[in-house]
Length: 473
Image (cartoon, rainbow, N blue to C red; front, side, top):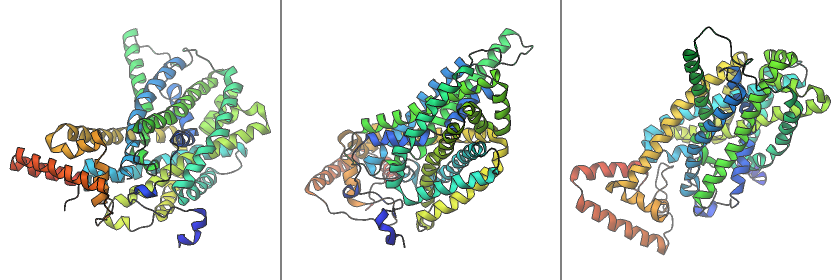
């Protein structure tokens, strides 16, 4: 059915490996542009608000915590993104190398849950802002549905159009946030007296409580910035396998850090305006983040409403990535799920997160912090296992084949030559002379390993190779 619409280049591929001849992306700077579009969104602004609003930090304490938490949190995202061009596999498929087949299925389920949660949070903030645009005349549920349907359409058409949308959508939104910063700066304050509740605690207890709040907010910032790590490779798989991993890491890091950190800093600063302007405080109490944005731009009249509309629609940039990756993660759960077309996951996922958003809208801050707690717990575990497994393979004698991949950039060609681990059956690809030479070299290494290992070590190693995707015959 989808072939009828090939004129607009709808992506029909699921989790199959992207072969060399199918990789058409060549401008690595587009990676940064895509991540800009995904992160210049209201949830990034809202997460900065949590510093002074929820954790009762001063403006400067919030700023420092945001910067350090975000700097650290984006490292695993950029590291995972490098696997996309190297393997041609989506993130959850690649995780089978480290987690094994069934372990990756469990990770995919967690990835689906987190994607639904973030899509719901984005839709809530977009709907809150739409209500302000239309002077509270539309229900929250209607705003959520509007944002979600538009997001579904873009994520439905797939990789190419997703990149095109993200590449340009951030530009007007960035300009709008710059205008907000200029207009609202009059009411920002660095006062610590208004942001910290007076208590009867002694100085020592107060200091411990302050450190606890800073660490908690730092963990929150880390969770926000690292949340993309479980799908970061999904958006780089159409780049050539010879693409510099340093460039992939750099552009992914910059594309995440700059928009995320800047909007979190602006969110923290904007919330301090509720201390000095009662109208801002009332607007925040009524419509949460959307109300604060509306109050900040109230003096601009109709033009301010237009900027608010841009803010509301910016949440689509976050939703389309989450739902696109959700559709891929769903196919990794098990063989039977792989047979379901990707677009069906997009439709079903959209329906589910619409319902979640409607339920969670009344307690936004609690919903956001709960999601961040879940994200931090499992994403850190996911990254540590993937990286440690790779490091162990790079140092153990049983990991000689993987050392070839990382040290000499040969493994991916041999792996691609014999088996596609994202499908149920091997898919032979025509061997070049160079590939034959690589195969012969690997066979020599295997022979050497067999002569230096015990039978037990050999059995364990064979199991490791199988889980990592080496052809088993």
